[in-house]
Length: 587
Image (tube, rainbow, N blue to C red):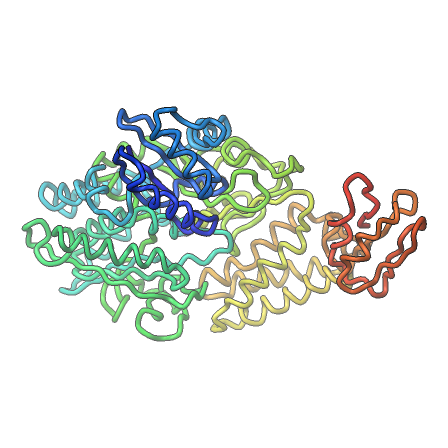
């Protein structure tokens, strides 16, 4: 029997370490021997900590929201032959079934299944067969042809054809070329790369080795943000194991091909997601983009030909080479082949990591896989593509998830962040949040980006503060155009997108802020006030006791009152007022 515990960052944050310790403590207490295995994230972050029990006959049971006590109870039931504890099961439930079966896993094929720190687990599932096939049976040109047939496009956001980038670097002259993996995942709410690195690091290494064979690189660099310590640790273990097995290093698989990988820890600047800014950071300089051409494939890391792809792109490569480009191309749409990994976050019931075939609708992702909106509130919008993306409203829920369709909405596919919001979210404030992020992350090289985003942010802050004026919307749109057209890199070019899409789809909400001095979502502090209903108030005094600024007063048998001058709009009174009274409201 095998006991498998999810030990990704999400699982550990939810309490997986005490579960693991509880499982380890049971070893030696039973006459029946069993194996304990740590694994990564299967994507069901909403049910972490997760624990699998795999019986000797192959039957597997997944338990969710496990703690140390539950783990011991579950183990006892299985070890004593009583079978699964149905009350704790996760994977057999209808909701978990919908979450998993609607997905198609290519990049995430091993996540939550193998031990990420055991190369033999990866090999047992066909790992490194694609590398062996490429080196021993295929020429670099034949590998490029398979990638071209597959239709694989870069999954880091731009969606550029992978085969074209590889071929461009291969055709450049030079005896020393570099291969770089962009693992500098910086979008708020995005954790696709982190989960892949923590759960299946060898798929990245194998994909990079195949790409290096194609372009003629002997050195690879994984640029990973330092905020991912677990991912870096498991990458270091995987690289060491791959060297020992002969999959990295000199004369890989007894061939003339030599290639090795090192890790560079980044400081976490969002702009370093741009290729040339990333290269500058790798070289020890401040992460700032430069004009192109020359492109990295011509003059990149240390002025040598360099190919850069992100984690998810590389993770798809072994599957494609092993099964053929046509198999990957058979998935998805004419314009967008294969699958895409998304991080579901925000006001959604089943948040986590999902991989779906291109062409699936946003509605199916959010409501079928994600289970819909928390507390069954009304869906309002989904922010797709991170700070450079845009908000897609409920009226466009049936939009297919592919590059062309998403771009037509004003958003972008991006790296895969998908933040869901409900009717309690203020779209003006949401646009302000994303613009605040990009304004702070701007490297400052371009005047339009450095100053323009600051001016746009000031306008949005003024509107949220109830000080909006006639003409502000037109000024925002004018500034957005100047910033988009005048910025050097994708950060500035995409910075106005959250503002433009919210103005496009939620213009009435902006108008309410400016003309009526009202926030329809009741979130902007300067445009709301909390009140106590004199009829509903039962004078229990809970609100007054919990108020952090003592702005609520009252007496027994008399309704309590809020001093609006002292109120800081924290919402504590609304939170603590007993549901059966519902005396506090926000207007």
